[in-house]
Amino acid sequence: MQSNFNQLLLCVACFLLLVACESGSNSDGSAAADLVLTNAYVYTVDEVDTVAEAVAVNDGEIVFVGSAEEASAYIGESTEVRDLGGAMLMPGIHDMHIHALGTVEPDMCDLGSQSLSLEDMVPVLKECISTYDIATGEWLIVLQWAFSGGNQPSEKLPHIRAALDAVSTEHPIFLWGDDGHHAAANSLAFALARNSDGENVEINAETLKSEFSDYRPMIAVDANGSPTGGVNEDARLLLRSNGLADMLGMSNGLDETMPRVARKMAESGITSLQDAIVTPETLAAYGKLEDSGKMTFRLRAALVEPPSEEISEIDSHIELLSSLREEYEDSDLISANAVKLFADAVLEGNPLTSPPTMPVAALLDGFKQPIFGGSIEDGSFDIVGYVDPERETCKAVQAEPDAYSDADRMEAFVSEFGFYPQQCIPHQGILEHDEQFIRAYIRKTTEAGFHVHVHALADKAVRIAVDEFAKVKDIADQHGTSQSLAHVQLA
Image 1 (cartoon, helix red, strand yellow):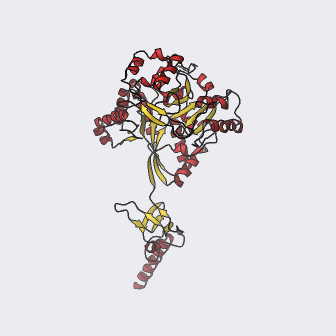
Image 2: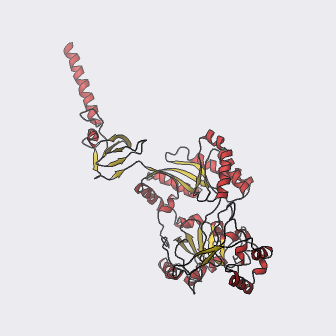
Image 3: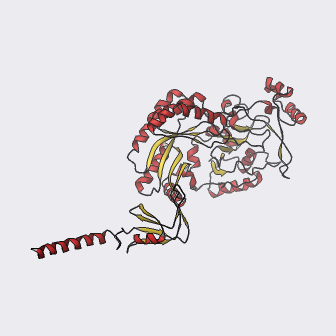
């Protein structure tokens, strides 16, 4: 009887030993890991910034962080061991404002943010027309124009519009700025503009006073009110209605782009992110990436605001957002539970135009109008003063601005005072939406349980957004949702 019992114990022991061997256990009882990274500078980002030497990973989870000696206990026969040679290892980065699709370059004309003078830009863009075999009448779309660097004018090319006309008068040309807010166009592109009804109405000095008067602050003009090529913010959509598709190179689809985005995020150490502008189309592309098994990060999608300015249409837009959120509720990697709202624009203007193109972002107290002097060629070009809008000369302009549109009178004014009569007109910038719309959108999307992410760059938009955030903070807390601002520069 005892002999049979001993045999039973031996069988059980052998079975347990086999199970242990199959599960990868080591002689000291620790489970062998799939991967051990050793000889590394492991920055743990804990409360005291502990630095370790090794990390063990099993079945996709970190099971050990500590010394190289201790990590050896996790090395089994099938464990992959990587000696990092002292390289740094750190937790994944959580990027809460990124345009992930913009991190990879589509195959199209791209200036790569080079600071080119207008003269130097012309042959580069002519080469693009040739390289991409763009037919007469077809658009030349150009990415990553460095709006804030280079662009020095010449006697022959006084502004970007003239430079783009020198590239071609047979192709409409559109340059997307590398900040996502500025752009530039040639004369043919301005001639193809469309109004809110989809009708072709050229953008010129006259239509900027009538049909497109609301867009006047977003379009750079010369002393006579004619466009000089600069087109910013919503005014860009008058020329290119689907700007996001242009900037992301979506015209050829995203099937090839999305795996490249996943690789880029992995190479950059980004393991979770909030994409700050997501449309239903790009959300579907993320979903397809997840289904392919190639998605290397977790995504919070910040869905873009409605194109309408009507508060009455916010509710129907939220219904669309809610349906998208519900569609991805069971996703392991995608959360479509945030919204993005543009409250204002940007602060960069253009001092190289005459008169200077002012920033668009809204300021509570308005902008000072700069007076420039010196030469671009010898590097002495700089601000030499500011226009005093309270001086009698400016008061006269403010009372009758149209009286100073005559070219001869304008030239005489500049010769006498050193600045343009238009610079007497106070400029406060603009909000991207009516203030009441901004407030209602923040309130309604918060009530609907969305994280709210607001582009607010200057003090007026920041004040409005923060004020409304404060009013709905209790509601956001009940939902467990966040309130955040992006790009705050002047507040």
